[in-house]
Every structure is written in structure tokens, then in C-alpha cells.
Length: 82
Image 1 (cartoon, rainbow, N blue to C red):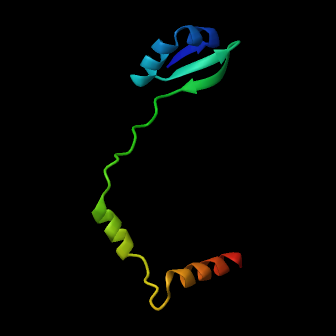
Image 2: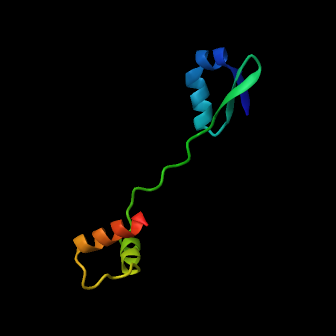
């Protein structure tokens, strides 16, 4: 973990960000008091969509036989009020 003053961080921002990308944590201080901590953003989730997982989820949902979508939504809205 590296500790830098606001002025140091401002002067070397590109280098500080490179260190953070490499996995290091940087603490920014003002007058010796820590005011911020810079850490790398967690890796983003894969944008791949799993259709099998979606179908399994949909198949697990209860069926509302004999009711059209408008009636179903109306019933949900009524139930949510109470």
C-alpha cells in the first residue's frame, strides 16, 4: 500500500493509476489524514449470456393459467397496495 499526499497524487496521477491497475492500493492523505483509498475496479462480469440458465429460470416460474397479462398485472398492483 502506498500513501501519497493530495499534491503528490495530483502530480503523478498517471503513475498512480498504473500502480492501481497493477493491483496496488493507494491511500491519499490531506495534512496527514487519510481521505481516500484508490483500489482497482473488480473484473467485469462476462457479457456472455447463458440461454440455458435463462430457460431454467423461466421454467421454474409459476404459471398463471386462465389469466391474460393485463389481469395478472392488475392483480399484482392491487396486491402491492395492501
